[in-house]
Length: 351
Image (cartoon, rainbow, N blue to C red; front, side, top):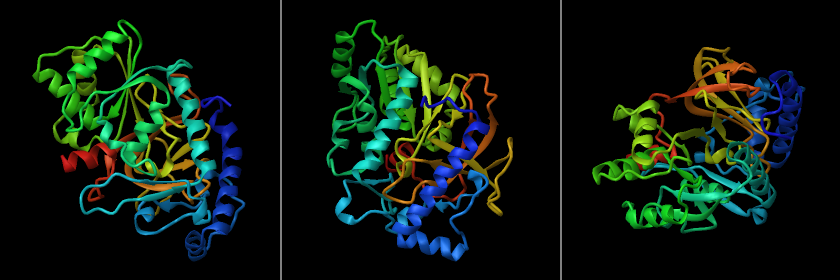
């Protein structure tokens, strides 16, 4: 099924039923999750809406070991980003869950870029992929998106310095061609755009696309908003297509991609609820609250309904000017006093 092919009303019942089945499965397979549901007095349904599905706070994965598979079936362990001294989330994947994540991410990327694998420039260092069995959120993001590129080239060296010879050689191999540039927001700014500006270098990638994600906190502290970020990208690289996405290691694969109107969209594989911080009730369109993310992909751990520590606003459903059906929203940033945890923000705090 194409990722943006169902209206909100068409999706509601099927999505709710699928999430209810996941809730029942994880209740049976994960003892700590079952205890949470028992304490809350939550049964297996029926649930009228996906807003009624019980959720976990995303922080639970920092403080508890939550998995719904035997330990000998763990294929890969993912860890969230975190600054020094912070605990990190640990997400345990079996082969099926990892496969689901890759398949859904592939469908989303085809929708964004087409079926051709483009020459890819990664705004990071190759040293981030050191441990293939225990990936950080940064490494997982790089590895996941690099599946959709070819001639993968890193723009930074192992010391996180701009590797201009490698970049220029990459562009020389693909003159005038569409290219795929990927990076985490703060790193693109701090280690790519600013050094290019300082060295007086303007690259020529007018046919390319930049996909970036991660926290904006450090850039907002520097008074850099989305418009200024896009302007600087255009000046230093010639890139006109700049696309932001929202996602997290706790729900790898089911990311929310920005449309041409600057709105983040839920696909048929995921959705979003905005909740009131006082009683966790679902808020209507136009009101700011805590973002809850829902995904059909987590099978090896109970991560299908997670309350984040991010603030957002539901902007509408089925009426975005871009034409995509379903819910669309915007993210405002971290809730006050929440831990820094996004790939960009965690790195920026360390930096």
